[in-house]
Image (cartoon, rainbow, N blue to C red):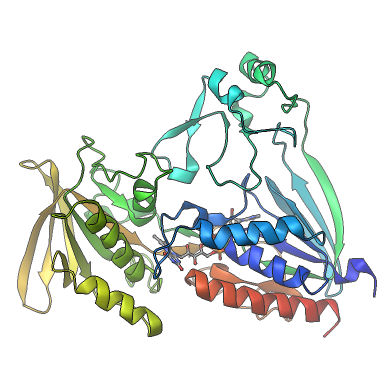
Length: 418
Ligand SMILES: Cc1cc2nc3c(=O)[nH]c(=O)nc-3n(C[C@H](O)[C@H](O)[C@H](O)COP(=O)(O)OP(=O)(O)OC[C@H]3O[C@@H](n4cnc5c(N)ncnc54)[C@H](O)[C@@H]3O)c2cc1C
C-alpha cells in the first residue's frame, strides 16, 4: 500500500483533531491537519483551567504540540480550509485552500510589527471583549508561535510600516492564497463547536445588560492572558466582582433554543465558581440549575465545590435578569423549585452557561455524513469520513480525547479498505 492511500486528512486542529492526528501518525500513517484559525488548539486554548483538576490548558495542549512538532509524519496547515473532497475510502482527492499569514518562519515574536501597527481588530480569542493590533500573536501559547497580519491592513501603508519594522525579514506582503491537492485514504472530521448565541435568550439580557456575560467569556476574564490579566472585573465599571450568579441551561433543554443538554456546562460553572472563590475570601457564587449533571468521576468535583459555604446551589430556572440600579449589578428572578419560593438575588455579574452548537449546524459540508436535528454528525465513519469529538455531541476534553483516539483507529482501518 502506498503512502497516499495510508495518508489521513484531519479537518479541525482542536484537541480532538490533534489527538486523532498524533494517534494515527504514531502508528506510521501520514497525517495532514487543516485548521482554519491561525493556531492549533481550538476552544481549549481559550479556557483558563480544566475541570476537574483545575490545571491550565497548557498541560494538555503542550504535549500535543510537542508530539506534532517531533513527528515527521504530521504536516499541518493553519488559516486553511478544505475546498473539496472527492473519491471513496482508500482513494480520496482533497483540495485545501491556505490563506496567507504574511509572516514566515523567520518570526521571532519580537513584537516590533505590533508596536508600529495602529489598526485594531476584535480579539476573537477573547470573544470580542477587547481588541488586538492587526499585526498580532493570536495568544501567548499559540502554536505555531508566530505573528499574523490581518487581511484588513494588507495593501495599506500600515502593512508596509509593519514590514519595515521587522528586523528579521519575517513579513512577506506578497504572500498569496494557495491551493494544495492531497491524495488521502480517509478523513477525520473534527470541526468542534461554538457557544449558543446568548442574545437569542432575550429574557436573560445578554447584549443589553453589560454585566451579563457568557461562560466562554468568563473563562477569558479569569485567564491570566485574558483581557483583564486574570482579574474578574465587572464590564460596566471595572469593579472587582464580589459575587457572581451562574445561570445554568441558558437556552439549553429548552424547546425554543437548544432542546438538548450540553453535558459540560454544570461542571464548567462549578469550576468557574472556584475562580470567584479563589480570588476573594469573602466572595460569593450562586449557581441556578435545573439538575446538576456531574456524572461518574465528576461527582467528587461537584461535592467538593458544593461543600464551600460561599457557593450556593439553587434548583431554579431563572426567568428574568435586569439591571440593579442600586448596586450597578444584576437582579436575577425566578422560582426556587425545592422550596417553592421566589428567587430574587442581586449579584455583581451574571454568567450564562450557554450550550454547545456543532460547527456543522451552520455549514454542513457536502460530504457523505449524516446529521441529527441539531447538526451534530451521527455517521459512524463507514463512508471513510470519520467524525471525532464535539462535532458528534457535546463532550468534555477527556471524552473528546477518547473519541478521537477511536476515530484515528477507524480512519486507519478505512485506509486499509476495512
Ligand atoms: C464554558 C466551557 C468550559 C469548558 N471547560 C472545560 C473544562 O474545564 N474541562 C473539560 O474537559 N472540558 C471543558 N469544556 C469542553 C471543551 O471545550 C471541549 O471538550 C473541547 O473544546 C472539544 O474539542 P474539539 O476539538 O472537539 O472542538 P474545538 O475545541 O471546537 O476545536 C475544533 C477546531 O476545528 C476548527 N475548525 C472548525 N471548523 C473548521 C473548518 N471548516 N476547517 C478547518 N478547521 C475548522 C476550529 O477552529 C477549532 O480549532 C468546556 C466547554 C465550555 C462551553
